[in-house]
Amino acid sequence: MSCKVFHIFLTDDDLEDRQFFEQAINELDIDLVFKSFDNGVELMENLHSDAKLPDFIFLDLNMPLMNGEECLNDIREESKFSEIPVIIYSTFIDEDKIKKLRKNGASIILKKPNSFLQLKTAIESCINNLVPTLPL
Image 1 (cartoon, rainbow, N blue to C red):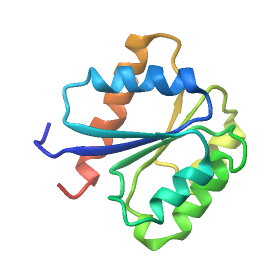
Image 2: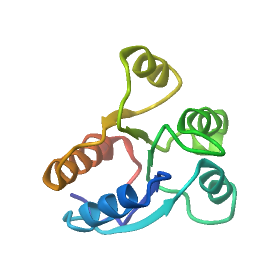
Image 3: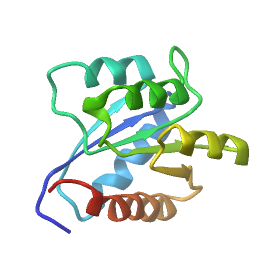
Image 4: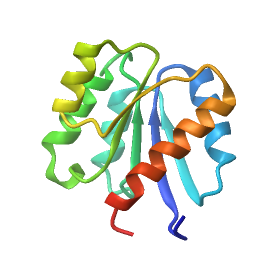
């Protein structure tokens, strides 16, 4: 992979899922800066701040305050966020929801895996599939 440092955001209201994700992503062979948020409001506040924008956003759907679908819609309405890949990362997503999320700009739909190894593999696959679309 490139020598770029990737900024990766995860927004998920489940603390254990955030910790599990962070452990998995830290074992990947990439340079990264990881930030996690426990709700969509915090994510959107960070995106609208002067902080560096992420290279990837992993976004849970079922969250309080502002759910993942609302975040996705708000992200895609802002031109300065239009190039950021958004990976929907959720426990359950039905076919109709998948179609709607793709139509609204989701880059990848990732069902939360059951094992640590599956999670690592899935995250790495998402990043590898999206890296050619990023300006390095």
